[in-house]
Image (cartoon, rainbow, N blue to C red; front, side):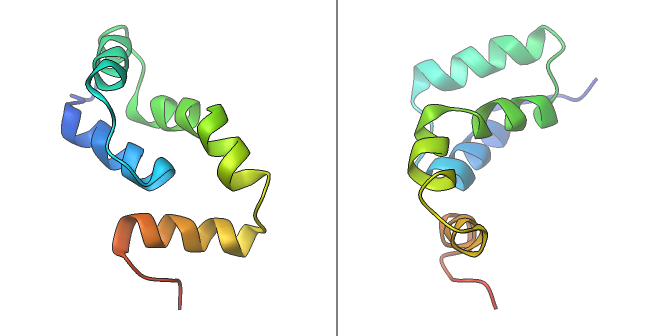
Length: 79
């Protein structure tokens, strides 16, 4: 079983939402990881959240979605 900490979760929040996770959200996912939910499974659940689907997936092309992730993670657009 992988050891998931708040740093892992913060990276996912920044990638998907372009912002750090709030303490309640981080604590929620940490508690879920203690019940055998993997980081990959948490990532999947985050990408299904309304905040992500309504603001990114539904409104943007695939290229724009990838650019948004790159901007969130690396501060630049894709090459």
